[in-house]
Image (cartoon, rainbow, N blue to C red; front, side, top):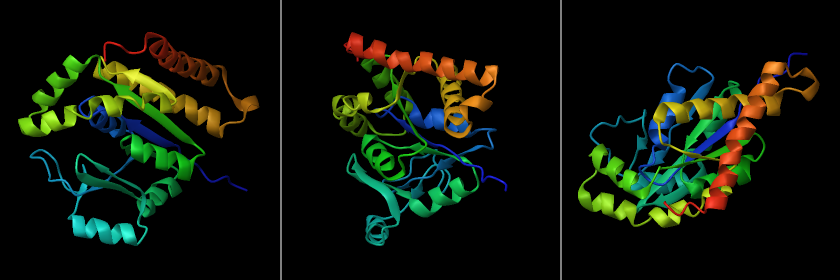
Length: 228
């Protein structure tokens, strides 16, 4: 009997401007095994964003109707706007045997972990410093200054949830961070879906590399991330 292929549920979270959305786009580019869960949102579309590709942009009235129908596996209010994840679309991706990638905040992460639990891999992305975060937010230039200031006012609160994640990475260099996430995903696939007795030397090497990356979280705890 043929075993149905399974996929992981990969969560990427970070303070606004730390780079999780850019990382998510890099991860799914030319990767047929990972598909992005496109969130529904009530916020206005930015100039460079595309509907149904970056987000599904809807009105608050439409959002509330979907919420009442239990359409969302998770939803949250972030910066005065609503964001939600379609349960139907998550199942559709997972049924294809693909990994589902979530670009969500800590609130959504908690709900996804609670409802999907098994095969969930949570990754929190940190900026190198607050100074660098401000620089990135301003460079993005898709939000006016008052929106940037509003997002920064939630920085410490968002940052306080990083210990809830299995992996924590400092996004100093985009390509290096992408490589680390790919190692994590590969290792988690081996750990979740391949019996220990069937692991190859290369599989085991990748798992050890992911465990080394996981140690970065412990090092951050010891340092108490004072610079952030």
